Figure 1 (cartoon, helix red, strand yellow):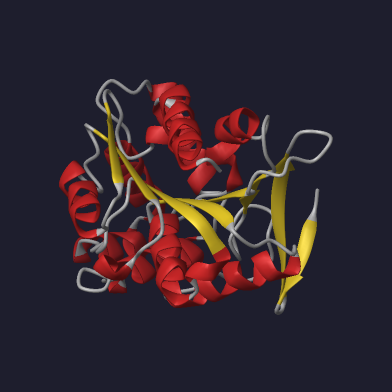
Figure 2 (cartoon, one colour):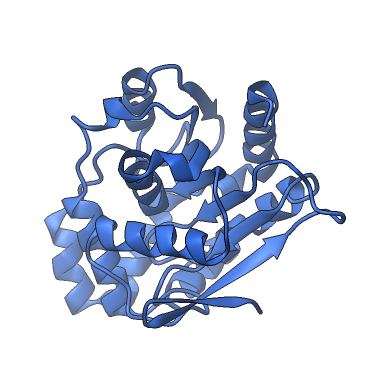
Length: 258
């Protein structure tokens, strides 16, 4: 498993790509709160056929070291250092939920690092209900179960929900709490209009955590952006409709010629 040292943390990532190497811009996937690179495995395989595709574990998540963060700006700096450590520039960055917040932050902080961005199931503001923080202390497993059910479209099987719960609980509760604090403090409602990078916004029709109105706001604020509403999908749209998400990203990049 490949790692790169970023500050004090060993950051784990998974990489797919064609051989010989492609001249197309690499694509980097950033997961959401409590997640890991595993939410992107199907997109890695599909999009990695034509270009280098990388999914990273944020600090304290997956196989990465570190202890997580409670501010999006901290994660932003880690990803910027991660790109530098791998010698990546003009990257296509795809971020889900909290990862979308990180992507927006990089797009504003250092747009020269990026060729384009894809914002999946996210918004310019990601408030978390105060009761979630209270319940996370009292009943962490039950709270994670509640969040997981909200993240899927109606009709998700008990087996799928259990897999989701098990996956999130591999992340420590303090790291999950830090992620939720980072989301709650995130607010780029006024600044997001300054993003000038080519942008694709993707969201599920049944997303209860980042409803389609969040994506529509991003689309209307980011000049020239494209908007894709995926049917029969909730917050975990890339897991629920993986082919549709991959196809949308591929089409977007083909239209850009990158």
